[in-house]
Amino acid sequence: MQHTSKFFQTMCALSVICLTLLVSSPLALLAFSDSAPSIPASDPPNDQEEPEPEPESKYTIPNNAIDAYYMNENPDNSPIPSKPVYDVFTVEERQAQGLVLEVPKVSPYYGQKVVYLTFDDGPEPENTPAILAILKNQGIKATFFVVGNQVEKYPTILRQIYQDGHAIGNHSYNHVYRELYQSTNSYFSQLRHTDEIIKNILGVRPRISRAPGGSTGSFTKEYWATLKNLGYTEVGWNISSGDASSAKAGQLVNNIAAQMDNKNLWSHATLLMHDGRGHAETVKALPAIIKFYKDRQFEFRVVNFETPSPW
Image (cartoon, rainbow, N blue to C red; front, side, top):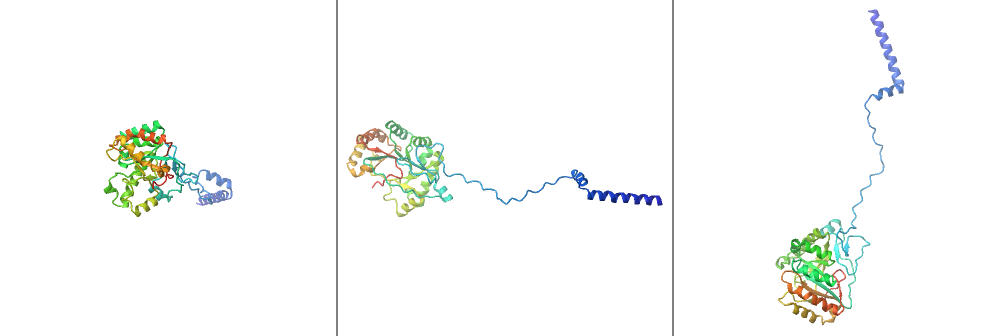
């Protein structure tokens, strides 16, 4: 019993010595700590906040861009004289991003002899390609006011109009007067819908428009105010070919020649024609119409922000 007590005392003394050595020796602690699982140290505090990603640039143009003026919010991007005008944003996109809707201020262009050839109601698979071929052969650029439901049917023809460097305007979605002119909301809903269709095909949308049947008798002050607020430029005409009738090609040329006797129109003659279904006579008359203006040294231009009001 006394032997056991001495042994116990000896073991306790050794334990105390070992514990004292462990506590007082950093090397011993380090040796033991190597076998212990490591705990990652927390990152030091960072007083600098992570930089916010830069917003995507609005200064873009579509991959299929032609020689035109593209409205893309670049402050150095001034309107280009005598070129078609397109917008990379729809009305809704401009409103959502707080972008300017109004048309930039541009001085109207009055030359001594200027003519704007315009075609309504297309694209159409027979007349429009034939007109485009004549214009290309003659080296002429024109303006096509397209209808949304026709664009849906013939997107390839719309692409050809665009790629050939002609101007494109918005001529409503369905051209049905009783639906279109029910209210300003009905009218501008059709314009915006047609914009979206065109942009889905081309990557851009037009900023010029033409009211089916013309604005006279259809537009009230509310229409004009909304037109301005949403940034559309309405385009009328002051010379009519008369091709909405059953007139033959020769009579269409004579109609134009008679109206051109008014020399007040020479500085900004805006000629109304149609490329929709049933206008084969317009196609037949077009070479003679172009010759009429070329013989008199007229300058052919596309409709854009510079185009003066017809009257």
